[in-house]
Length: 224
Image 1 (cartoon, one colour):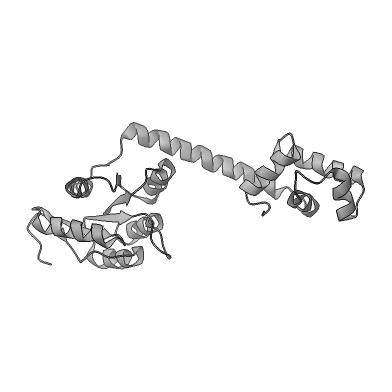
Image 2 (cartoon, one colour):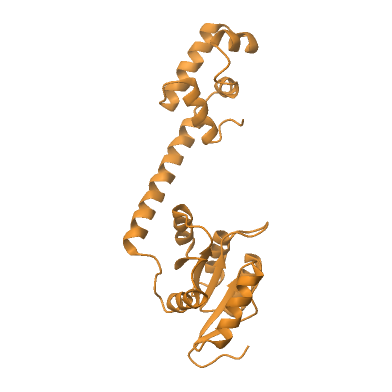
């Protein structure tokens, strides 16, 4: 595709054909924007093109059918073409998703409800170095993301301290097995069960077996 002098080069990556057709049509009429290739429907294709063509900006969807998602696609694009600015597009506002996008290297985060012209204006702005997220919001979200990772790391340490027998006890239904029932099922004494449960509650810093099971499930220690 012939490039106009001084224009911003753009790649569109989205598997919703109606949207990409609309974006492509407007790009062709918009001065200062040039597509480096026809829109692609997967992050894998986008990464390959960015490695070869190094567009100024890419509009990247988040959710794709199978394979890589848009967050991982963003990360890979920034690895093969660090100068390419990635603007993430999504149909749903999700603060956690915004954090993941920024941490992957995205310069912006836009809802698909925006008018096509607004989306392309955002792509232009990102290509010129503008960050399309309010700095105060971004700072808050990054702090929240850091706290969540810290909490997950702490939970992983707690889970790692479980013994095989403690995991076995947690795997049993918390709301229907009394200690006597657990003891009979595992062929151990009720006093031993009580000791194991007490140790689990201490390790997880919780107050009931039901709460302990919920914590274990949430953090991948047991499956239900």
